[in-house]
Image (cartoon, rainbow, N blue to C red; front, side, top):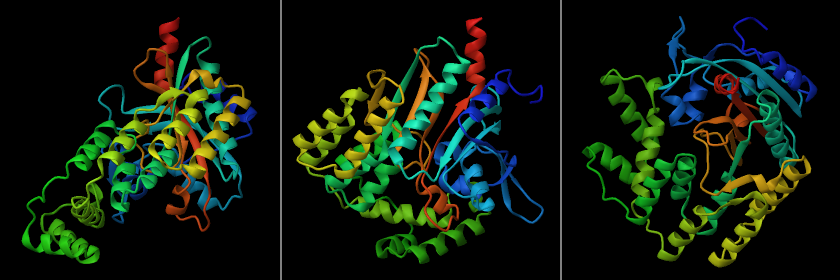
Length: 373
């Protein structure tokens, strides 16, 4: 470790080695497209972009999950395999420096989803217990799979399920989506050619039209959403305006999002919700229950972990468990993670590879350690 690394770096590296991980280093300069396409709006607008001599859009590494997964695919390593990392990431931030250290573990290829989820949470908790001895922490869980199972069980059409799933993790986006679901907005004013293409649902033609307009205006597709993504959103919005959820279904969705209980009471709470709403959560609830048991088996008290049905994290690649751990009475997470079973396929893996992982913010940890001195 160099002098630039936090003082706790060597202790973290020893913990990672003891937990049977492979230490990995990934390049600071990364291809930007995977982050722009898959990391979510919140991270996308914080990325430092640049360009190679060949015109490829690159970025300074804003997080580790995507680079570690890309490295795994390129190396053609077998699974299951656990990777650990500790290094700098680069993001535009309103508070704190734009360069800061993160450490974490990415657990790839374990088919025992409940066990791998529980182990990821336990690994994150163990790391914080090591570097912040005696610090009381709070753990909050959410589950995108359960959320999507509720949306499907309530009969929401695909377009609405996709919009709400994308909003999961952003309270503002979710609130706006629910407001539109309750009172669908009127059609916006679109230019004639665009309006016709949207009405026809012609994604290819609309994408081409938008790309041409962006080129004429001198706008780079890499600076934000791609023409195809913009076209898809316009068509989805037009389709969404034609849907109005029944009062009963809308009330049930609000009831689900209000579920906020300690983890050892979460399964009964979800069963009670499902019975009251007249829906079945099927495999999503079974997997949730299996994970809760696995968490308890690893020594974490489920009475001290909170399940919030509306809790998500603002990264688009999450597919199941999401969690954050913070200092008691703290306003920012010290660790965050979740499951991302579709990510490696989207990044180019030839076969599906399940994955779950977490990161810790070492600058926030260091601040708490200084405060405790």
